[in-house]
Image (cartoon, rainbow over all chains, first blue to last red; front, side, top):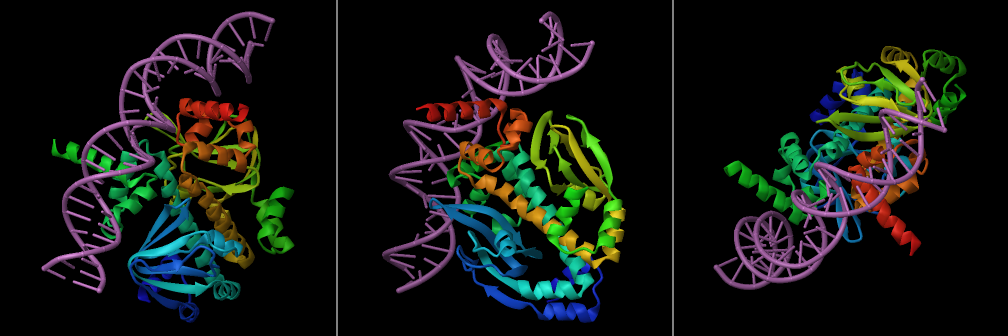
Length: 193
Length: 193
DNA sequence: GCGGTTTATTAAACTAGTTTAATGAGATTG
DNA sequence: CAATCTCATTAAACTAGTTTAATAAACCGC
């Protein structure tokens, strides 16, 4: 769990004994490619850390898959609305490839936050970072065309296309697979000339 | 500042003397319609609370205005990337109507978080709430058509169309004013029949 | 209240996407 | 290794948006 430990310490100082206790609360989950961590209707009372692999957050509505986010190594994640509100999830969290996840129970996390100001601080800063990262997701919208959005994604998250099928990328960009394929074709032509 | 006080206490218990000290750190800012709170190039070392009015968060790129968010009464906000990274802003925060804002300096906030676990907790929970609200923004993308997105906005934030000109709504939805006008026309016809 | 500016609508030509369906190419499995 | 399944591409008809420009309506400052 060295990655997770380093990650936490990158936010702020946490005393060894406190940090060790905190880490002892995590359980390890190994997901095979295609396996779901959360499905609609489930309660979400864990906060996750993605140690390796890739998880996508999506819903199915009118038979259509809508990908909202891809989580990659070294990130904290959960289905936050369900986690916070204690309501059943409306989403899936599913592995696009074999993935290792560490999970902490909400009640354990909150008790720890109560008893340690340092951990509370870590909680605040990690939440802040996650929120800030979500801004770049909104930026997506601010690209003028879908072609621009696709190129920006290629540039910012080049690893994604290795581990994620193209039709999920299309969904993430708000396109059909056919639409994305057209864009790619267009881009190929430009490159060759 | 009763609204702000109540808002803070809605997250968790904060002792009177601590809360009074925290509130004393805020300065009040009155913005006239059209006035900017933040402009590109500026450093952002304050966190804001919108007491009344409406503020929009946008950038201008290639001469085009791109609205990322509208903030309305009772919300905490800032240009988070610039605030966190200490880098100059690339955005505007501007009032769509006369607005009252309370502002706290980053250094004051952080000192207070150091000295009070309760305030740190408030900081974490408010950040969490803000992050969670941003999910609904992402949901936007998951509507199938722009018409659906417009209708959903009408439904979820009916007040917005009172205080915000239509071309900003269009930008927020990722449309041109012409495009939004067409959608509205289409919807009118449906209603009449 | 007048004159100027800002905002919304309309039209017409165009473009970038969708939908449906067929084909092809790569993986996976029995 | 063959059969199946999944994923990406292509084509063709269609649709929902864009762009540009003109017009109309609403809003402000003096």
